[in-house]
Length: 259
Image (cartoon, rainbow, N blue to C red):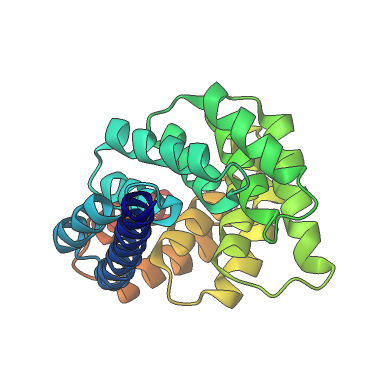
């Protein structure tokens, strides 16, 4: 009996020691994940990967670490590796909308449109998902690239409507306006393309790409003076950029037409 009791006592001590060691590893992994996420926020993806891979060794079943690894690899354009980690995160935590959105974005980057569509449609129909405007804008961009412009238009409009209903304006709002304008231009609806970009530059007055797109929309809708001013704004905002060189060429074309 005494021997059996000793065995049980040793077993209990061993289990307790293992549990304590496991908890210590989890805390160490969390610390490394926090450092890795700080590097991610600052765009230091190599340093982020170093910390996150170390965290993964300590806690391989942590869905947040897997998602962070996927994001770091996505930013480094290691898209297949990113997909592996996002899928692992979803295996560990199926109800993980951030990882699902990141997986969809990665498929977008690979131009695997149909795989991305399935993910973003699922997210956009999830009533508990806090930012339904994001998958809607992504779906708008996907269908724009698939040249299914009427579908693209509908998704962009749905996203913009959420902002009209009280959602705070953010970068996604600007992306929705720009996407809708590009879609209108692709459909030959040039005058309609102007309004979304005029709204966008009011909320993002230092975004040269928006002014370049606005210059194109004005040109296509035959508003040449406004187009020139838009291209000049690009040059003012980003004087040494490739975009400014393109704006200069477009402005020169318009000037030649006026002579």
